[in-house]
Length: 423
Ligand code: DGY
Image (cartoon, rainbow, N blue to C red; front, side, top):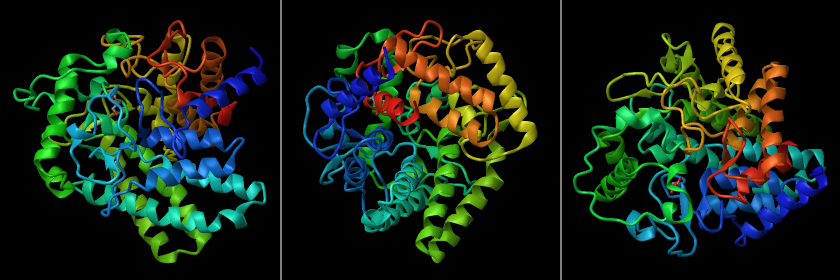
């Protein structure tokens, strides 16, 4: 397929999944607005429709709660094809939303949209929109500081595996054990009605997901209560790196807008993260790893999120060298980087969601970080592998790192968006 054909196909996916101001990740499997999906989708729209790109992010932030929280799903309209739907979340908000968040990539995306507007001499027309988004972004980042870092360590503590975006990563297996699933009750999954169960999380994992949702409902989705008593609290390496990066981009915007007070506040958040992030370095594995806040134990899993240290701008020569060594080792074992789990891990499964498959959005962040850090050959490999997967197989939710076959939903919005933004 030629680049032009792929461009046309990618745009057609975003257009078909556009519900008017927001884009569904995939019409059948995920029929609502998802938080980080939308942010990446905006990068795709920005390659041909700037206004629509900004609108995507603005629509998402229209669902922000008063405390700064930005939900992981916004249920703009009902759809019986998805479970757990609005009545299960029962957050009592308008629009109806879920009660957990997702990786905070939005500030980095907004900075990209702004840079692109400047390059096209369109910044005057977007400045007020930027000011308004800036206020919402910083409110969300403050919410992370106040409700997702209970010990003030400068990391992001996930209160639900879905918050990390890497739903069924083995990083959550042991920390998930204390979750009481005895009262979850009967329910019918919809994901396995659309997709092969072999590509999806297990029943045990789903029981835990629902038990945590029920816990949030029982707390009336009061974030202070959840922060204090949640049975699952894992310092996620992915969200911690992503928030650090997002704060650097937000600081850039604050400086641009002359928001000195906010800039000082963001600098303080960055300093706390830079000072605290080493807690997530696993000396035994020589890798960045998620760590259970409740037991203090490192997960010991090397996942694609471990490689987001470059994107976070950490620039620690010894740790960078260790991560590059892992990248080369993993790259010699699989056809396509970056598998969501180390292929030498006994739990590696090439098509099961976040236990093996390659995700274009994660690769985009890893590749961007590597390029910025000057690791050109590694950056080129990650980008090349990502684009090759799409050229050979189309725009799937994820791909097998072994043979490149598509995994999960097809015609997937964020994959198409990454093609447009990165090719
Ligand atoms: C799902 O339902 O699989 C989603 O990933 C939750 O956000």
